[in-house]
Length: 273
Image (cartoon, rainbow, N blue to C red; front, side, top):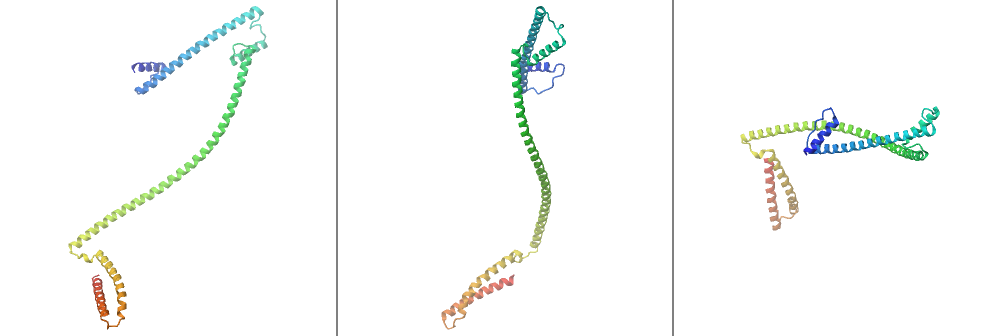
C-alpha cells in the first residue's frame, strides 16, 4: 500500500509540475484507481517515447537517402536544386509534397499507385459512412421532433396536474377545517349532553319519561296493535254465532277476556305515553 501511495504521489507531482497537487481522500479505492492511472500513463509515455525515437530514426534515414540522391544527381547527371528551372523546381516540390501527404517512402510510380488506391478506397468508405450518418441523422431528427412533441404534451399534463393538485389541496384544506369545526361542535354538544344528564340525575328525574323510553314504549304499542289484529279476525266468526251453544259461548268469553286484557294493556300504555 505504501509503495502504491509513493508511486501515485510521484506521478501526480510529474503531472502537475510546479502547480500544487489537489487534495483528495486517501483510501484504498482512490489509491488503487490513481495507481492504475499512473501505470497506464507511464505505459503510454513509454510507447510515445519509442514512437518518437522511431520517427527520429526514420527522419535520419530519409535525410541520409536524400543526401545520397543529391550526390548521385550532382555527380552522375550534374543536376542540383539550384540549377533546376522554376517549373521543374515547382514540379519537384509538388512531387515531394504529394509523397509526404501519401506517406510513401519514395516518389516512384510503384509507391504512388498503391497509395492513391488506398486513398480512393478510404474516400469511398468515408462517403459510404457519410451517407449512413446522414440517414441516422435524419432518423434522429425525426425522433427529436417526436420527443419534443411528447415533452410538450408531458409539460402540459404536468401543468394541468399541478393546477388540479392545487385545487384538490384547497378543497382538502377546506374539508379539514369543516371536519375540525364539526369535531369541536360534537365535543361541545357531548359536553352539553353530559352536563344536562348530570342535572337531570341531580333532580331525580324518572328515566321512564326520557325520549328513549318513550320510543321503546311506542314500539311496544305498535307490536301489541299488530298482535290484536289477528285476534280480532279470529273472534269475528264467533260474534255471528247463536248464543245457545255452550261451547261457542265459552270460546267467545275466552276471546273477550283476551281482547279485554289486550285493550286494557294498550290503554295503559297509551295513557302512560
